[in-house]
Image (tube, rainbow, N blue to C red):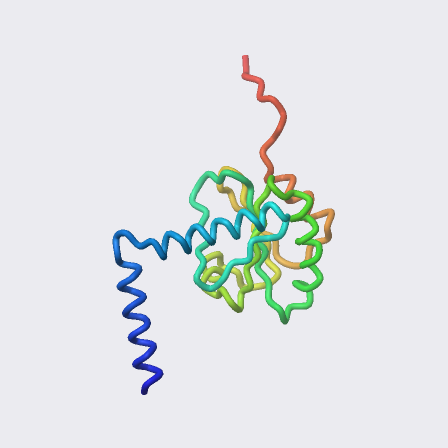
Length: 159
C-alpha cells in the first residue's frame, strides 16, 4: 500500500512538473539527450533508444537513418550486432544509426510492425522506409546504406 501511494505521489508530482510552461529540468533533460545523441554519432556508435524514447519518421529527414530492432536472446541479432556497429562507424556523420531493443521498447517495435527480429529499417532523406527482416551480411548492409544516401552526382536539368 505504501509503495502504491508513493508511486502515485511521484507520478502526480512528475505530471505537475512536466505540465509547467517554463520547465528548466525538462529542457535540461532534452539538452542532455541531444548531447548524448551527438556524442554517439561523433563516435560512430548507434544511438540506443530507451523505453521512454520516441521514434517517428514523418517526411524528410536531415540525414538517412538505419534502425536495428533486436533482442538479447536472439542469435541472429547477436551475429548482426558487430556488423551493424562496424557499418555505423564507417558512416558516422553521414547516416544516423539507431538501436532498438524490442524487449525494452515494445511500443516502438509495435509502432513499426516489427514481429520478427532482427528487423532493419532504412529511411532515406525523403522519409521513405525500406525494411529487411533477418540476418544481413556486411556487404548487403553496406549496399542498403548506400542506397539510402543522397546522390552526390550533379543533377542535370532536362532539355
